[in-house]
Length: 79
Image 1 (tube, rainbow, N blue to C red):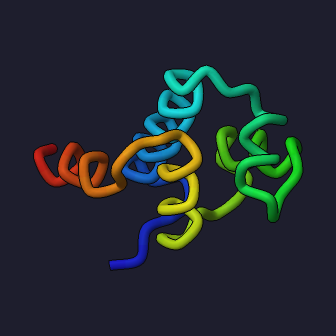
Image 2: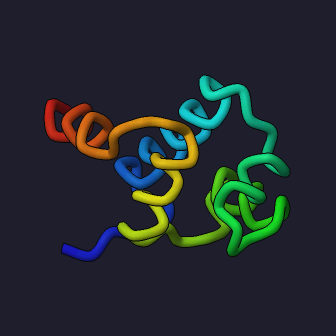
Image 3: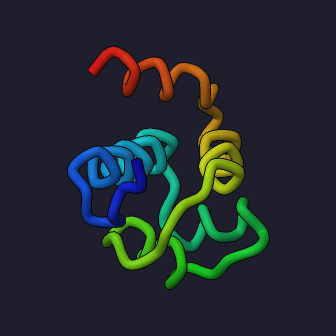
């Protein structure tokens, strides 16, 4: 099953990613610097649902926030 970037599950993932960033005390600009491969506007577009996130980028995002990706995936599996 291919999910649209606007599917509820994908929107939940983006919201969780933003929450991780905020919980880590990072601005979008700081997050972009930690990710090294994007700028602040790219982080903003991800959080607003204008950019697709692949699994490798998700792993990098979790690492940048100091969170274990497996813990976040477990949250989604429980839903």
